[in-house]
Image (tube, rainbow, N blue to C red; front, side, top):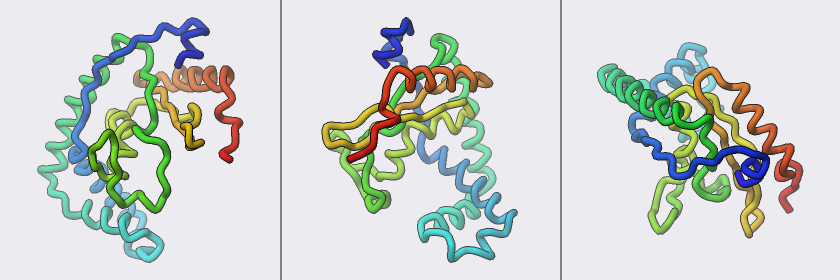
Length: 186
């Protein structure tokens, strides 16, 4: 972000963003995913190609009551309005893609420790992108550096509705000013 500031970008810190419940996300995402996989016949015809966890999530999505789904959609509309209100005060949001450095794929189903608190790895890794998926805003994730342990760090830029070009221009500008995307992990 500092490289963009050096190029003239105005940086506004401490922007207060609302945060949706992960339960709301699941209540919307799982039935929608289940419906898509059922409609295409994938789940019934190719169940063995899914991981156990994905299969369980899709089957759970089939059992979410319509009233819960509709309540979550209502909450989503309220959340969307709050996020769009924040974006009236800034051009874009610039934040990490995930709240921790990359973790081994084998740890995805486990608990991990973030700032002394045990959290589900998958929930944690989705926590900074999921809000913008719910709202349907354009976002782009790109390499933003490495930790002292040489683990990649991702950044994301999130824009206003229908401003995909702005998001891509900023991501491109960042990559023109840095070389993180060209470095190999050793």
